[in-house]
Length: 184
Image (cartoon, rainbow, N blue to C red; front, side, top):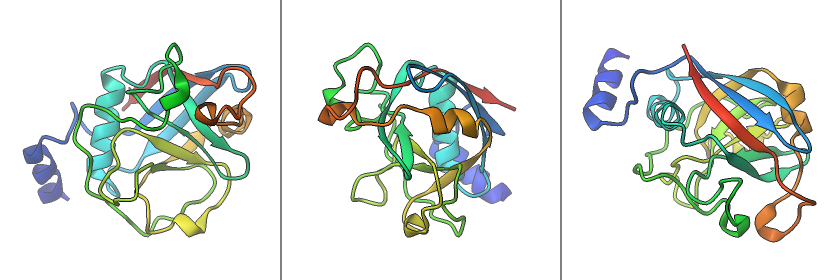
């Protein structure tokens, strides 16, 4: 583990320090409340470092849930095109100015409340976007990087407004991560 952390620091992927979790304040017409996530730095140290660095810089604040599929998952984290005050037709197509990450697939199952990194076709293309599972999705196992688990706020997760603003398949504005804090 020490060697792995040293390698991550040497690559410049780590943020200020690997943290224990995130607190996400959600607001909108659907959900209002806080989702607490335990980050799995031992499972995906590079991805956890990237997420905590972005959260620590405030880049997730004001970003919408741009793809929310009932019975599947809620996706967010497009810090480039997913701001609540932006034209959301490109939401879900961007990332951050940080490099994409090499996959860190594991044997952790995609169960209800598990947080995974979104990516394009290339398994090494995760950047800033992540998703939270509404229910089990074993078909994702071993194909996406798991970064955490919801420990509190599943009721808030369940209330997130369904839809996809890019396709116009949402009534009104999507719900927003108003603040994302790194916790120790």
